[in-house]
Length: 144
Image 1 (cartoon, rainbow, N blue to C red):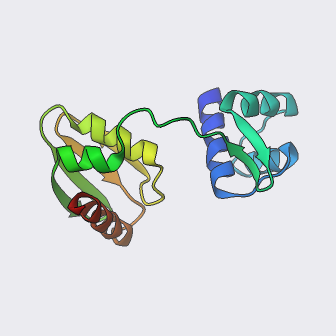
Image 2 (cartoon, rainbow, N blue to C red):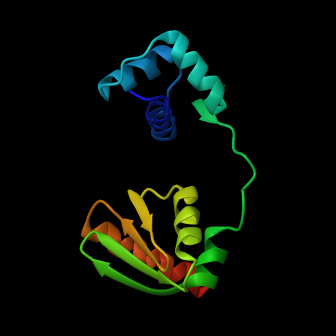
C-alpha cells in the first residue's frame, strides 16, 4: 500500500466519521484492507496536519489556494450535459483543468471524481439521481 493512498484514505475517514483515537483510525483502515502500525499512523497524522478536537481528528484548514469554485464556474462553464451518472462540463479551450481542480478542492459529496481535458471536464457521480442534483447545484451556482 503506498503512502499517498493510505493518507488519502485517512483523510476520507476523518472527514466522514468521528475518530477519537489512533486505534479507531487503525481499525477503520483495517476495514478497508489497509494494515498499518501505530508509528506509521502517528507520522501520517502529523504529515496530514490532523489535530484532535472535541469532535475527533480534524484537518487544519489551509487558506484557499486560488479562486473559489463559484467564480471559476461562472467565468469558464459554457455547457453541461448529463449521461446517466456522468456530467460533462464544457469550458472555453484551456480552462477545463482549472474547473476540475476547483471541483476537486470543493470536496463535494456528490462528486466521486473528475477527469479534465482541454475544454471538457467529466464529473463522475455515484448514480443518475446524484448527477441531476449536481447539475442543479452547478446551475444554481452560476445563476448567482
